[in-house]
Length: 424
Image (cartoon, rainbow, N blue to C red):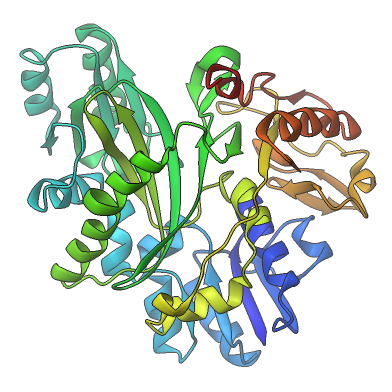
């Protein structure tokens, strides 16, 4: 089979690595890809939002399966464009990707179908939002309605912070058009857990759990980022939590989308908060999380192409989804100054240390080839992942492996997986 992966981050590198393991994959293309992906696939200089060019390329190369990794093209309707060009696509159509594309839509869906989530209100004007805040209890959460690279969420401890947040999102448009609408929701406390799932429109099969670290600095301080590291499985995702979520969250979400005439085929990422009153949905994503994919996919036993094709064909019920009885930890190496401002173009040394090592992975997120050298090309540069018999071993190995590589102004969190110790 000829496979086309759309995207350029660590998530797409993890997908490409899984696809390469499949005996069914004869040729892998990635658009636009990065320097790490280029070592296992042919990267083509087409942007993820260049829909017509992607469709022309897929037809020209007779692509058998296109895998859309990123949120922007999914929400923008790339799946629809490729399907109309006769290409088989793994990833939700535009009318289903709205599950991630509009937080107001997803909150309304949960309310309508009684899927447990935080209480909330939607606002189209800053004035109405500010008036509502005068009567709201603090702390409170402000969410830009649209896509904001995982950064359009503000947790406000005081009324003054909340008012400033409304200005940031709706008036200053710090997150662009994503801030045209605003969701204000109650602040929930508890453990955060991520659960990725394969969906074929009616059947859902969940993957192993994971836990993300969103804040830029140690001790969960600093700004929200796209993710500074992850571990899998989460020790807090118990059998009881799983059973509750299957009954009240996972299948009801799939059924709700079908009932709305928006059958979802692809990946649903459930961001969960384990509150005192039980699990609640924090957010949905319509694709693999990044860096969650970097700890979940290395643990998957199945041939990823078999699973994706079953989703497309509505035959997921025939798949026995299985994961290794091990653990994985990913530490993100970022550019100093991320997520605000950072420099690019620094050479990366030590990458060859990962060659031939089975339980160590170096996923490229923001890299490119320049004059024959691999250099930094983004805020999150590398995802250093290791697997082990348990979370502690995986974490020790991941932090051992981060020492193998280096680049100027390198930055990382030193406490990824700290919750592992708290779980004891």
